[in-house]
Image (cartoon, rainbow, N blue to C red; front, side, top):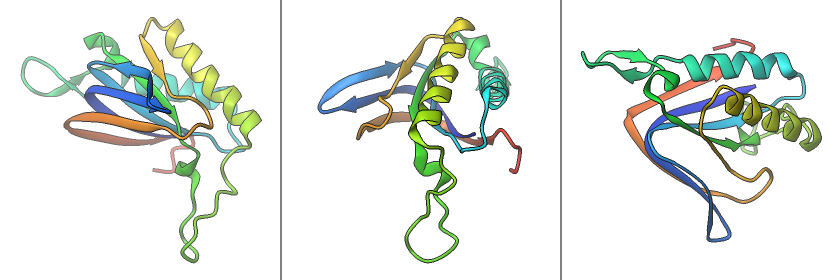
Length: 149
């Protein structure tokens, strides 16, 4: 499982001119699922993202987590995070999970975040989405459950 995590002051996702997910201060998570992922990967990513200390404390040090600041989460599925561009000019998506598995784990991720008491907005799995954000910092982190980077 891969995620691009961006600290935002606000973010929203629009499908067919309708805002379907919107947050204020928090994290925008672009979430990709590979065919090898399981619930164990979801658990790792939930723990890492909700407790990642990338919000500033009173001394302007990145020392606080989303949970510490009462931030919100906007989760958007993005299979293109598993696009392999090493050969040729056209990305290969053979490492991206098939929609049945990807949908299941994406929804599990959202549910587990809600169970932790986090306000969660979402995109629409498989839809063409427009994502707007105001990156605060800017702060952007790359995470992967198999810890290859």
